[in-house]
Amino acid sequence: MITGELKSQVDKIWESFWTGGVSNPLTVIEQFTYLLFIRRLDETQLLEEKKAAMIKKPIANPVFTEAQKELRWSSFKNKEPQTMFDLFNKPMVGGLSVFEHMKQVGAENGVFAKYMSGATFMIPNARLLDQVVQMIDKIKMEDRDTKGDLYEYLLSKIATAGTNGQFRTPRHIIKMMVDMVQPTKEDTICDPSAGSAGFLVAAGEYFHENHPEYFHDKDFREHYNSDMFTGIEFDNTMLRIGAMNLQLHGIENPNLIGKDSLSESNGDVRNQFSLILANPPFKGSLDYDGVESSILHTVKSKKTELLFLGLMLRMLTTGGRCAVIVPDGVLFGSSNAHKQIRKEIIENHKLDAVISMPSGVFKPYAGVSTAVLFFTKTGTGGTDKVWFYDMQADGYTLDDKRTETRDNDIPDIVSRYHNLNDEKDRKRTDKSFLVPFADIKANDWDLSINRYKEVVYDEVTYAKPAVIIQDIKNLQEENKKKLLILEELLK
Image (cartoon, rainbow, N blue to C red):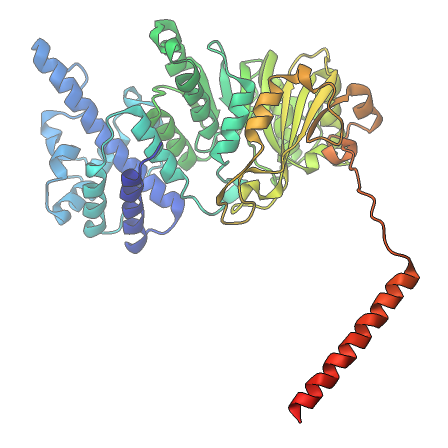
């Protein structure tokens, strides 16, 4: 849990960027991320130097040579602002600046370093750089929780939607989805539209919160740090932000892939993941020749929200599970493509649940109504009864302010999902209920909860018309008397 002190420190850094002329939220986060990484590089070497001193052996692969001492955080943070700024911008030490050295440290310094080729230093002046460096230096980042909380709070400051439909998925919704699928220690987990890697981070945190004993097992630690998590993202800025988010949460070497998930270049990723968690872009449209052919065989569409469902079926292993956020239109759209993908999931695989969410969940980014689909890849069918839940509250007001409230269906959703045997007697007037496969098929594969939910209307008894008319006359007479009294008072 982030503390008030840490929030205050991050807020001050954010305000310094803003008043210093860097106002784009993603740019602020990216520049902040570079500085965190530069500090991290120095801390890594300091730790190695301590080890080397104890065993009286030189460091095998130093991040900084002796000649590059001035490029280290512990050195330049104490220099005059202009000197520090020059060290960041000009090749002063062995032909390298602080920033260029950061870009060239190599993959051995973590997944973040792999995606540095397009990094650009955008802090405009010495005063702002010095302010931000001094403030970051004061932040205590000794443990995984603090580092992770700091970065998550930083990411929460993205208050506007990005390009290509990018916006931050609310972390409590991600946690709900992760708590429902309950990742296992053997899972290989993927987000094919990873963004800032929020789903992968939440899956990792699930193990720390629910199964800390797993980390005593060397095989699990190796799997967790290297093989368990895969994110695919075509935006290099988001790749760097996602890489830093994962590393600060203690996931050392996740597999991040810089590709367009839907393209032919990603076509070799098949039957690979046992769990997919995602919130893919909603409103994109692609030409057929830009989409990998097997996806089009599953769903012939140009809409990204449908294409991603086809992609996920391709990427999952048989028996693999998926939890994915979709716009409401996916549930009831009447086009051939909409029906095709719904039929594919329901008839040829196993649709487990549909959680209908209120339209305010994604405010202030967007007001679109959404749902979460939970399905299992089987290739042989298996849908028997689909569990529907009509979420009406998520713990926050549904306006742009999104203020925390007591009304929250999420604990009930998670609890009921893990006890579906108790749901068989629920009525369709309740918030949750089961719908048989035959009913869904008869409704042309429609998954809108309103198609199946029954509403009970209370009977209202009205007075007879003659009584209502007499009441109106009585009111008119009363008003006339009051007007006469008012006239007398005004004389």
